[in-house]
Length: 148
Image 1 (spheres, helix red, strand yellow):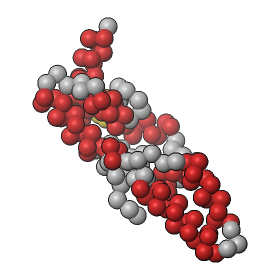
Image 2 (image 1 turned 30 degrees about the vertical axis):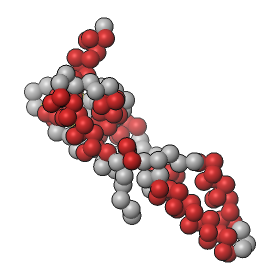
Image 3 (image 1 turned 90 degrees about the horizontal axis):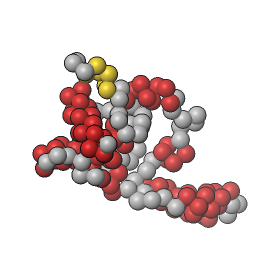
Image 4 (image 1 turned 60 degrees about the vertical axis):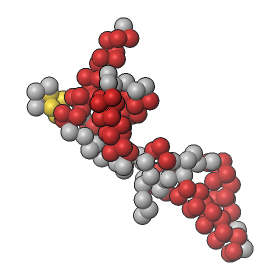
């Protein structure tokens, strides 16, 4: 298995081109089929993806389980769910894109979490502490109040 790239380093995958290349796998000319396989693999790798991310793992994640794994139990505030999107990674991307922190310290905190979560693979629980989740939620709540 290859190294998973941070989201900001990933390139887009030309899926139309990939499908055309995959169609060459059935060639009766072995060198052409092999060259197509290697080219397809290189395209996926250069996009910073894995084959599992491209084609999925079958039926895909159960949305109920996926959502539950993203809920973080905070000792004082209770359960915290991502305020934007379905994952903490989506929330952090949204906040970082807007430089949503009130000051440099908060923006640095958000950027650091984005880098940590960019390394997260798959649909497992996020690597974010309850206190970090509470801070992210507070930043989002402040923005939401300002927008009203």
